Length: 403
Image (cartoon, rainbow, N blue to C red; front, side, top):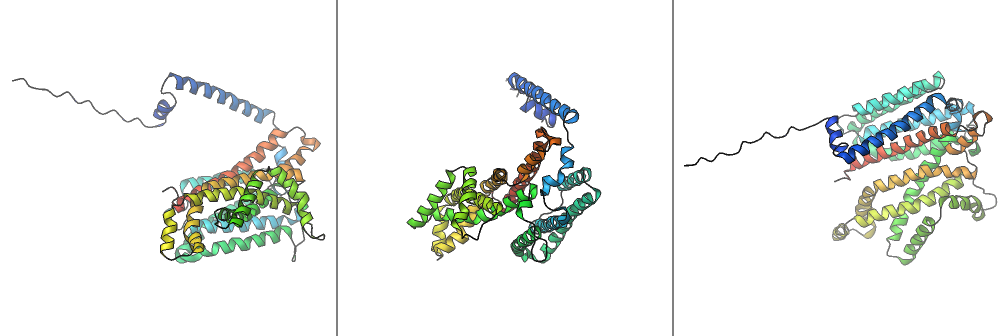
């Protein structure tokens, strides 16, 4: 009788893990990928070495510390700087409190990545070429964020309904911020002609976002309406605004808005720019929200009707919250674009972050130092845009939009 021998089982392949295994699998998997990787490494390495050589030998970075106040607050009176620090402290406290309340159920509030990030921000604050009192204030504000976040987390566990008051607190803070920056009611008035730099950029972006959000929702609902007049008006507004460049809309708003107002009312350039930015962004935001509305299954509306809800309650309680949750990535992308679009207001004579940079570069001492100035403001824009992106991902994670 012939005995059948089973083939010797070979041991399973060893799992390769680590950076070297990843490089072999993704960058050096065959001759073409290896060649492409080598070419890219040489090009990027040469570019990086050239930039480092320029940054350490030819660049004149003195432009930044010499004009740091102009970059951040423009021509705001130096004697009223305490008002800007008060605004920054108020926003930091509310931001930390909101962070702590919203993350009260997270197992670990201060993760290793968060602590490293705060440590990096603290190091940058210490190394910045600013007077020592300013460095101390920056570190104090960073500590205020951490302290209020911890306090919000503790208070949120004891008072679960505290989060419902956050929206009211932020709304009230807007009025306080306006009063502190603009003055009046006991404070020295500071005209918008003296606003500038990062402060003006952030102010216009935040106000435009707050105004275009409800207007965009109303336009999206109007475009979905069954009433022909409302639908036609909404469609007309959206298509006309989206068909006009923002720069043209800013020019039209700057010159034509006063024509529709009484002779004794002349809004300043900041208000006109905000109106133009709001109208432009609301049209695009309406389409983002409309896409979210169309993604909601029809069964949701039918189930609400079966429960006896009228169309208004169905939209407000069932359809719209789900549509907004789905539209978060698109809406945040629009808000980031709005922040970047504020650079166009410099053509109206406003000294936003880009406009104040052009003013600085007109100084004979810094003529031709475009690269240093634009790299610096580019980093500032990137930090704010990336922060908005991170916040968007955290909101999506909290709302479980990925499931």
